[in-house]
Image 1: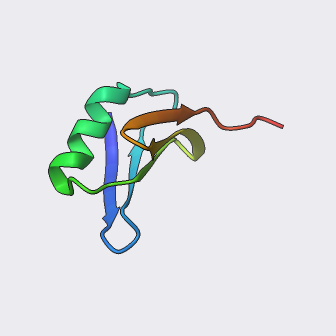
Image 2 (image 1 turned 30 degrees about the vertical axis):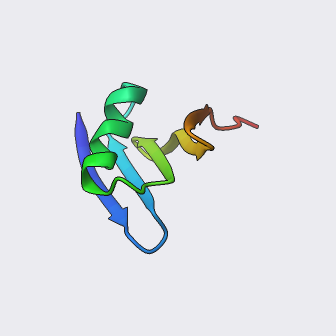
Image 3 (image 1 turned 120 degrees about the vertical axis):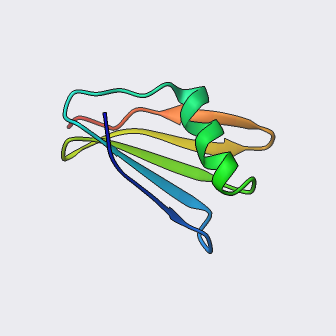
Length: 70
């Protein structure tokens, strides 16, 4: 369940806020932000108030990074 979506055009960075304990489909999330701006470079997902996965464009491919849970 999506709560909020935001995009910073100068930074080429998107944020997707979801309900607590939700997860999103990486390819679907990237496709959504690429429709907003084909030049998107980073995306952060947040579940509830907790950082979830970060996606970053590296070359021509996307890399997913899980948050550190220290």
